Image 1 (spheres, rainbow, N blue to C red):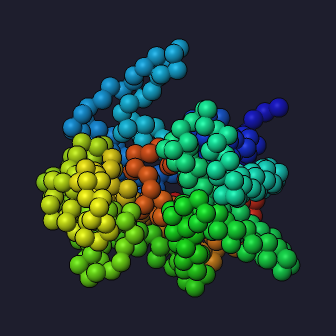
Image 2 (tube, rainbow, N blue to C red):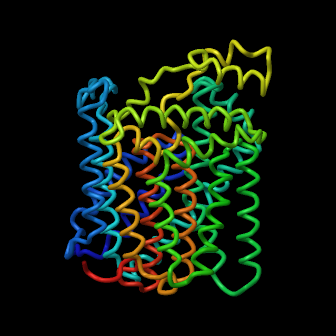
Length: 433
């Protein structure tokens, strides 16, 4: 049999079968999954044009890789021993760059799939999403039992609960496609009732497991879906232009704007309250090196505690509990990283990195075809995925968490596969610039 550029779909579906397993184990395996997908798809990649937004993306990634070399601690590229299972690639910039390269390969290979070859593969993806849905619901219902069962293999206090949350976040990336696929399956009301039921149960599961990112992601998912419905011509331009502004103004919006909530006396949960001071400190760090940033993962070296900022400590103790002053006093204001990717991009790659990221988002939004030119499933799923990614980017992982970006690219490939099934040639692009 002669391989052509149109048979990548079965390989993609085969890799996606592993999605629930990888998610349940903490989601780090998505990096390896996209690497394998990229290698399998390499023979199917056909690049005919280079577009403006692609140039902006490459420039942004190149700057991120360069920012590795003025970080406070320059790490070795490779470390450990592969035979002993301790081998790793230590430089986050290189990992991020390789993940971006693999992601581009997967997207280009998926864009060459034919409608005929995508049909059965989409059935596999829907099945995988439903399995992941069942796993997340089961986790929400039986969390204590699961933690007890897995205690011999994983820390039931810190590691495993975090893995369960990452599992829920991974499902949130597939949820927009699953809901859109079921909702637009037929005009039969029973399918739409099913989509509503899955959506409501998923939200309840996020609440039960304490997955605040998943809850926020579902809200933003619905907002983005509504935007492309209300503005069928300019919906994607509105979304991506807004994201470009968000990235550009992140230090002002988060480091100063959100902090004003405290001065107005708005009641805040402790976790979000601490996040506002974290973002305020990051804004101060940005002002120390505004143009090129402090280098990748510099935020891990920021060891300020509330004890180092007496006014902030007094505010925390007065708001919550006088008896836990000792806990606040030693608490890191920036716990490893800012838990906001646009702010971290500013802090560690400076105005240059943030501007390149914003330019990429802006040009991408203006090169996407209008929502009205996409099939109902594709445009709803794409808009919903954007909303979920914004939530994760704003509240969860480090900017350099390549496993998240790998999972986001795979979820994007699923939507592109649906577009190819619907007969959309190059669904996301208009023009050849």
